[in-house]
Length: 551
Image 1 (cartoon, rainbow, N blue to C red):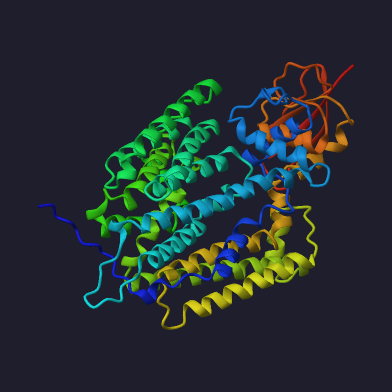
Image 2: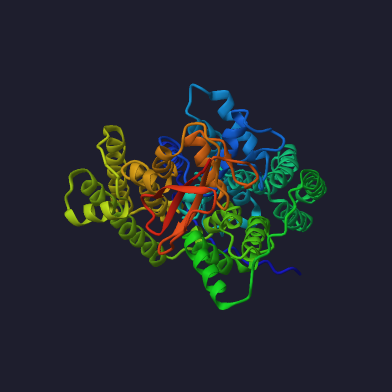
């Protein structure tokens, strides 16, 4: 006789009231839209990816083998085609950085949608249902599934790791979309037969084409095991399609040459501590709730409402660990961690939800006050100490008042206060209530930063101020040699300076840029004369030497 572990969920019908769709859409809009408009590409991966997209769209390099400063593309080609095509189609009506970000903003929105529907299908399975009451009154199947799905969406929005990386124009966001599509396909297999099959056959090859073939292979293998062990006939029939998708992903990765060995983990205490810190803040608060789910549902780990998200979460966690704490690999598993976190909601104790609520109120209210105080200091000079700190950290930055961002920030702050008042009121029985304040707080913080602080952040994180410092010393149209500079710097020189840039050292350029650290005394090499020594406004330790070739 098979022993069936009883469900740990006790949910009454009154607890599965749906989150109002207008409020849910407001959460999503407040999370997705800020950061898309009104800013430059930021340094490192965001700027480098945009540089290749812009070069492709403007015809300065080939679509099939894009180059930036003479350096070939090292990451996946397909996401760069997406951004380049958007720039080419929307130019000149839409600014190039905005045009490149629009399709990636759409991908982020689709990730939220796929996470909701994946959770909805998983929560409809028999093993995920709460314990029936002796005299009735337990939650109905659809209402329960909808409430858990609302919680998963809020958990994904509340996760700190998705905040910045999810708003960049990088291949990792396309990988996240492909992983979310694969998660949905596995979850929907018993309910959406042909749609799910089409989804998995699309998701794994897309994941490989976007630069994550190893994760696609591992996810395909884990998904096959989950499907073969399914108690649903439709779930077991799904296994051949997963196998086919895995083979297609492997073949596509081989054809595109995207296989790469990125193991960088060394078993030492320092790296283990760094990895632990990454997991704690990057997955907050999803990791805490996911661990609670694993404990409370420990007798159900082989059932599909847990095994499906566990497959993707384990694969992404393994990829991150073996990659030496790769946060972008960990980002791929965020939808799965959000699903696991959602299944903790029917089992949470009142004391746990109260602690999570008050921590969120304290942390995000304090951060919101800090943003407003420093904003006031930037605009008015009062308080004097924050204004002095801004002037010290960002010399040359001049703040100006803008009405529209100010009104948006005021509206967001009032919405946060209303949300706190609603949540701290009595008789709140909704299943998703515990994640409203964490998600609302993250959305508030991000929206305030992308409105009140956006000019300051742009000044500090964009390469435009650096190129502006270099520009007076470089003739228009001059060839600039910038070896030993990252691709993001080459992209900025081409975007803002409109100079032909060489990052290989193989071209005979009239101008050369060199890096110099504080305390060094670099002399101009033979055949070159020092024109200027400039510094990035927000970097005290690094200087740029502008050298001109002597006749």
